[in-house]
Length: 106
Length: 243
Image: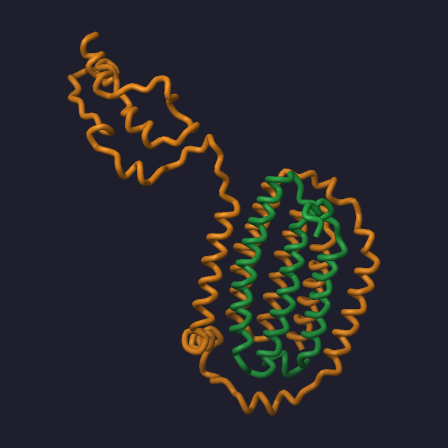
């Protein structure tokens, strides 16, 4: 019935680790716009959620799914704030390139 | 056998579309590929037995967050061709790090094993309840504070997004609530009796109550300029004398 009983947790973990790594590559290997970086953060959060759900289903413990609900809430709030910041940045600088975001020389 | 095939199908499509999110030239395309990624992840959630979260993922992400992303992407009039000039010069280092990371994570995943059957019999869940019922039973009892804190975080996100993007331009028409509450009905409303077969234009028309209007209007906003400031009563007596 449950797929976790037949194939185990390991394929879920491998898939989510690959997804996490794709998100990581999207953050620091592209010099495109800031919106791609936000999407990469969403991918990494999705990988974490996938792991949580796989373990929750493997252990028959519903707490992991509740944590996924909260992390979905946090991710929605984070993307809303991030898009607001990008909008303000684009309004001020007329560009959302990553290369030009060195105004503060941090 | 069918769930295993479905698992690999969903996982393959999810990973390929995640790669397309990263490497698509157009940000609109990458947002659309992110929707595809989330839909396939919802399929994986369904296979793992989390039906409510699969619906939640499709409804929230593909429905709300991605629409927000697409809205912001399409609002920005950036030169999309200019943005795509290739990868960074740290790209090789990044890809090497990612390769090492994915190899390490995969090795850790494959060598990780635990006896799942023992634990699942120890903490067995109630089989008669559905997934949504169990979530609801826990989230309003054990996790009520986390639930309320996440509501507060959403409130902070709403307020923060509004505060960040609110632009105070001088030509906007805005309200001053205190001034509007202090308006008097006698100087904002005008009651006239209109004769038969004559419109209000024959009587001189309605005169805008400009005194209170200028009191409530912001500086430099649209509308009548301060030069044509007239009181309602003197304007009315002037038109009455003329007729």
